[in-house]
Image 1 (cartoon, rainbow, N blue to C red):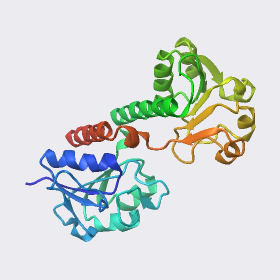
Image 2 (cartoon, rainbow, N blue to C red):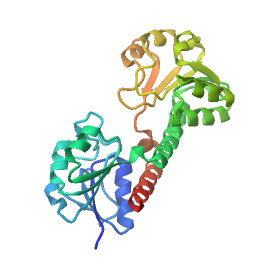
Image 3 (cartoon, rainbow, N blue to C red):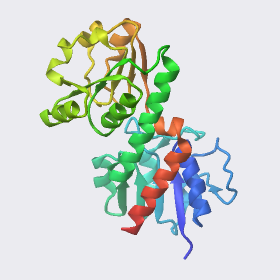
Amino acid sequence: MEKQIAVIGGDLRIAILAELLAKDDWKVLSYGFEKYSFQETSIQKIETLEKIGEQTECFFSSVPFSKDGIRIKAPFASKEIYFEEVFPKIKRGTFFAGALKEDWIQKYQAKITFVDLMEEECMTIQNAVSTVEGAIQKIMEETDRTIYQSKILILGFGRIGKLLANRLHSFGAQIYCEARKQTDLTWIQAYGYQPIPLSELKNCNLTQFDIVINTIPHLVLGEEEIQQLNPNCFVIDLASAPGGVDREAIQKRKIHFQWALALPGEVAPVSSAEFLKQAFDQVRMK
């Protein structure tokens, strides 16, 4: 039987993924790509979700699926796509996306098997690699000094924080890492970085840092901490919504700031699409 998949919304990574699937002998239906020109002419653009058809039992959508919990991330669509219009049209099958919410899953799990690719360990590691490379690119573009000998504070010591510390340290930067857990603080010290407990963040002389990078998806750099920052520093927030930096407070201080969401799709869409394809194939083989 012919393999058929519907790709519903998504950024450049997902568009490239659709082409990779087409090259892998999938019959690909796409919805929400009216503004994108596929190189693979076999990809069929459908105008309505009703045209998905009963033969389609595999679906792929945005990673992350939605920013606001209402609309699917679909920058190439001619109109907004609401997830509540998508799931009722699916009669059965497996739905692949990223950062799926539990209430969506519970509501439709009787007919749809949901696979959250952001919970696949290999995918999250590969995504972290792309994010870190994108963050370093942003730092080089947005600052007027070398990473070498810069004092850099990294907030959070998860996958992205660990990779950032490793890569930036190799450039010769002085690395300071904030963490909450004592085990993380011990590892930070063992790697040769300067550990900063979360409870001591306000008292660690924040004015010394040339670059501050946040990876924590809840408020860490609040108004009090922002008041202490060097006015010439660069602050970049890599965390998903709602982010970890008080954007109003940092705007008032006129500190150079970027909230850099979805960096893999922006700086390395081809590699990111290949990572998604690998994760998709690995899940299907389980």
